[in-house]
Image (cartoon, rainbow, N blue to C red; front, side, top):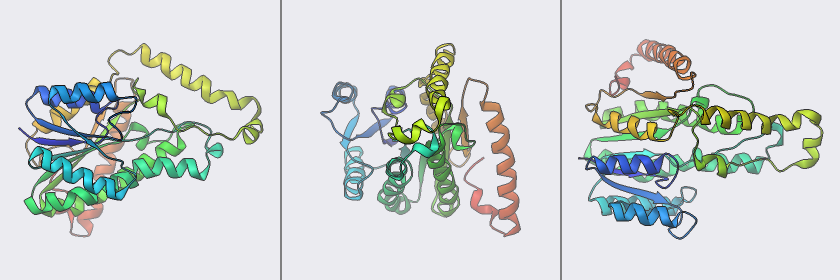
Length: 289
């Protein structure tokens, strides 16, 4: 059984994943920004189930260093890191302030980098590890009103592409999980633009984001298979695959978009393999099927 650290354990994907992994006998630790906030009841329930809860802010380097160290100490080691903490953003792109964008990137991109810098010395020292990342289908394509969020996930995907190759010689495998839209509390915490004067310049179009969000909610309500539990199942399935044979990207979607993203991922894999082969470094892709 593995020793697993999940960032954002009390969130929409983290919670069902933690429960599923603990049911399988894995040791699980997870991060929350605060034990006493609005998720205090969830934190208490996770601890009652056997999870080790670590207070950690992914936007603070000292907090992440201490948090990862605390997780390793609580678990007595670390085999798997699941970079799951994230924040969403929704709205007309022009209306997003630079501060809005910075906030999203600070969690979804730089936050992951802080965690990696804290955890990688441990993984390199033991010569083995598995790192999972929560991305998104719109980390592969861009759709209206998700520009800031998509940009952060595109950036994450690029960063992980590099980690995948640069960590392979150290026995550290990398796996990206790409969910479609899911009905989670993630939508409640979205960063949304606050620029009413500029918004008026969009006229009637300014109401389209709200209408689009309403249509998405209705579609998700009508698609019962599109639930966060599918992410938990995907993570458990990945961890059951022998080391070095896991797919680099796993699409989790029941809305009909998934097959198109998988087609894109296959094409990108072929391009990546060819380019790295031309440079004589295709062996750096060896830790993924």
